[in-house]
Length: 221
Length: 221
DNA sequence: TGACTTAGTGTAAAGTTTACACTATCTTGT
DNA sequence: ACAAGATAGTGTAAACTTTACACTAAGTCA
Image 1 (tube, each protein chain N blue to C red):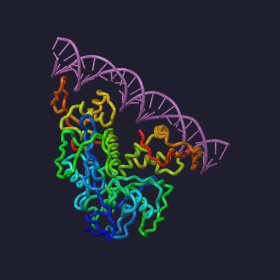
Image 2: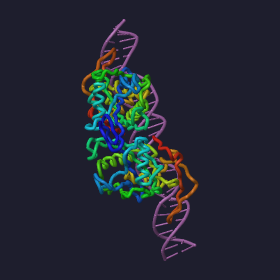
Image 3: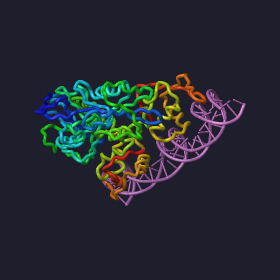
Image 4: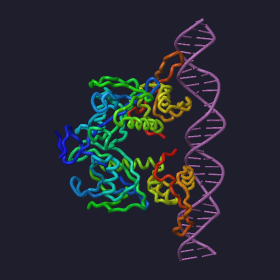
């Protein structure tokens, strides 16, 4: 038992995990194995330990529940409505993570809970206030495409300009002119040719590019 | 005494309060009356009650400690480093608030603690990790001037275009062309003439304007 | 070798942002 | 009463950025 002179809320971290695959923006959810909301889909997350900071806690939960590690993770917002959890007062610090489509190694998790990727178009009803959190993360992602290099976090080590443009078009839900996209992207000076080509399908092979500074999301413009 | 099966961190809210006055961006601080950091300046803030949500808690602390209410308040970031408070694990949800210069009613506070406004140029050493919080709030404020109407939150009900331009110039620390500033501001369609004039000093009187939608900070561009 | 598919490329028009200087209207001092 | 001094108020052209748009290149496959 832990005792305090004043009441303390519980603090959790929850993570909205995005990837782009099969021409869709997808979201990782886990099925809750216990009450409340048993059987409902929810964001991966859990209680913050007293000896780990918030981002470490989010990464730990991410790894435990989904097997995902070493990815881009950013704090989103902190949700603290009084009755957001029916058991006790729970404040959650929400993060969002972006995963390259070639790194989705599901079910390395130890927990017995079901884990699944859902298209943003057809995600199920969510536990707690998790739909709010997902909506806010989605909005933030869309905004950040415009003024940062966050989209690179979805790309594998080598990628073509066409694949990169696909990511933008899928998330922004709008077509972009190919010439203008290439001019813009190359002018940013954030990617460079690897010298390799991708030959696939009955057409001209595409040059492969890599991110110059893959660990940093730059603010552009 | 409050007992929990698992350890719970303490949760506080802290608020960075800005105003623009005397041609300077200023910050409200309170002097700590108790340990730790006794006698050091710090952000107003305090423990979240279990029956109030986070923003309500921030507003309550703001009112109690500074007498300020009804102002613009926005969540900034949540700070949770393991050792940011020497007493116990404390996670703080930081907010920032903007106050019109004609509304600064200091010391309506009941607490005996000293309260003071400090220029951002010469703010004292701060308790805990509060300097980090201030720096981040400052950065956010600067960014938001560019893509939102947040600057209106510093203005009284009626103001001149010159006064509004002063606010931009003080915070951004750069001079702006008067004609271009007016063209830009009026094109945003967010302020309108009140029909009144401000006559003050030995020069032509200035038209007074008011914000069309004063309770909402619009994203522009 | 022709049909199909995606990759790769430049230019002109439209729109936006920047630079820049003079007149208007008031107060104050002589 | 009028000159000096202060801030308010206004338009235009040049520089820069963004958008629209169509053809050739290099592969595979029938």
